[in-house]
Image 1: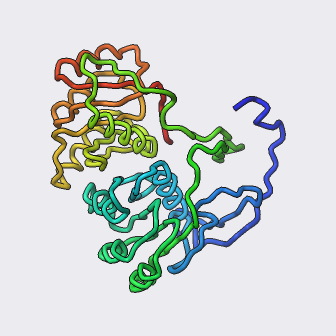
Image 2: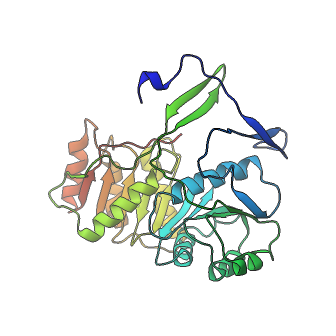
Length: 322
């Protein structure tokens, strides 16, 4: 965006839609305001067909989940807990995608938010009612699916009518003490073709998983590490102060879920300042890595990948998410 896209005087014209039960915690108050000029599809304007009132946290989590699932053209499912995906997958159907996403972390999915990018079917609804969920959001749902979900009357079911365009130009805002930060949205995953940095280029299967993994890691809080195998996450490490800790957490979560990382690929939202994540990924069984590149120590990471016959590609695009 240009300087002219940020006016010298910024005026808000939001209309209060509802008072929320409370904010992030019960001792905080909260409300939802809508921007009448914003016609984007999303959580704030979705039609709620059943369930309790939406809380402040429900709205944030559902927005994060729906933003992530909108990135995929094939049937996909995203499960979010506390603003982080705990399982993401694609499949032949939304039902298959959900089951594959759930397998990544069945523990964290408890009390989570499920987002779909295709119609919610009765078959999928039968599985959704098997665990405790806060919100299910999708563009549409079969009548039979809604009838099945009505057995869990407290679950909020949100239907948006369509999917948003993740590449749409827009701005995001965040308040800080004394002001507001405004930026252009992170509206892309890649910016051109990825570049192979190692002696070995990824196979077509690895490249497909690498592209999927980097799409997911864009939506995980920094520092973020995501392991993927066959179009499904198998380990996610989020929000740590060091990247290697995120790598260890992702590995640990995969072990807890009894999932193997052998033959998986790994994505990082930012470059590697040290080769430690490469070494950890190799030890875990990963065969390929995708990362932005751009560190002054890139060659050390490349050399470590070459040592283990791993493929590594650079995207040139970073996805810090705070």
